[in-house]
Length: 390
Ligand SMILES: *Cc1c(COP(=O)(O)O)cnc(C)c1O
Image (cartoon, rainbow, N blue to C red; front, top):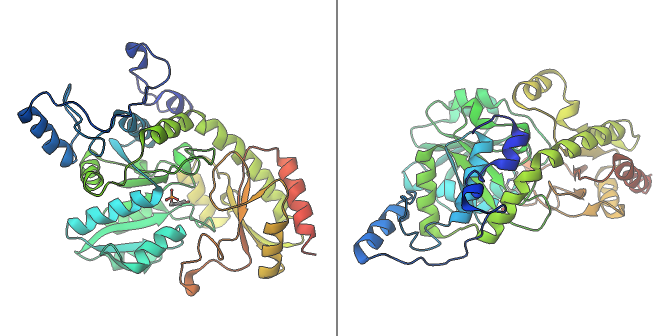
């Protein structure tokens, strides 16, 4: 049974065999090694899995770095939600980014065209070139002209971290031509946006954020074609940036409530954004739900809702931003996002600190990840903390 409805998918994806197995919750397989039937069959399985293949029916999994059924179950669920053939999960979002870059370098295509803003860690990794990549920073309009025959990847985020910039994903796919496109879909989640439907090759998630959803795990994943999944599993088998099975279980459980969490937090974020927009201490609210003109058209075309992330600029500049972040009482002053509780942080000082000064978010910007508390309590806390800046 397949259904395109994300609510139903979120609950049932990756669980279609549970009734036949006679269980209701997904089993967790913790085996670090697996019995081998004989030397020859074991060797064949090793070769197949270390090359990035999936195990055949009844074949040994050999070793957890090569294959784990609990991780694979989560991967299959995420692939269903992202409308891709497969997905490959990693120890963190940055391990997923690293594996993708290494796959490009290994294929002799080390050139990356990247559209800012990106998550600070991704920007940092590309900027250092420490994995052997060479980056060309481009606006969406500059992507086509930046592609060379050595380009292995075009990278962008929409909405972008931290200022919620919107990128027309179909236009980037067209501009990239033959070059594969990776979209970091962490902010939108598969509930609000499916980049693969627009021709995007690689859809990346930090599971640490909305998919885990409770601020208690680190993980990453790439949803993609079977061909890409094979390449990424090969990199994962060789370099070892694995998602642990216990964490895969939690991420898979997180998917079951993802739709209701995202939709509730989105409704609240719309209220909070509108309230901030009318506040005298706030210079500007950056939120897809308040987008106008071409940006509003992008939101309408490629998203099913504006999401739970927003940023806002303070009239009082850095001083006011820093005082507001420190003055919240219920809202937690912390990096990360997409969890059940509302978090606020100062991107220029924290998540985007490694970004070169000319590309760093402005010092008057705060990023807010809206959680599941009531809009009125979130607004009351923002009101008292903004009052400290007057
Ligand atoms: C957090 C984040 C990452 C990195 O994920 P980790 O799980 O922290 O390694 C990548 N992209 C975006 C958009 C993020 O918010």
